[in-house]
Length: 209
Image (cartoon, rainbow, N blue to C red; front, side, top):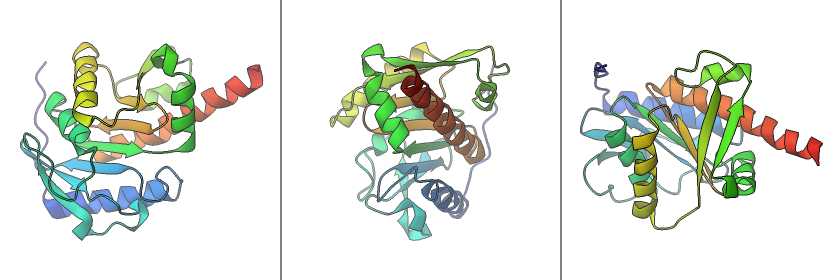
């Protein structure tokens, strides 16, 4: 099935969306200090990305850079920007990518790293993820070991995405969550839903000890 391309966004529109989501996620402590990075597709060739070293709750339009999806990241952007650009190349429908650093995402991804994935099932909130339409679904979130070699990590993610067209997120162990959506609103919804589900899984592990 072909996917109709989303209308192009202007840099000003994208910056406004990024600034707003930064404030939203910051007050929930999903991006402490200067952690995390966000992006918004502009068109088939370019994306707006956050500048490195900025508190995401205090972003302004000047902190938003333009990146060529098929070129090296712009100067001043996060070292992890290639992971965003790779997602736009691999997922033409993706319009926004959000990377967060919550305690629960870092902790649970470390605890489940040996399994290579976190399987979420029988939650009503699964219906907030992508095209999932029933709580009876099982949603697998891959977990990758943390790696300072970002191109190597991006290659691993690309290989997984090629096999898993259903994916809407992945975890990096001890690091955080990457998720994306067909709009900034959908990407934000994925963050909120996954943070809740990850918290539930972590609490369940405590109860069972």
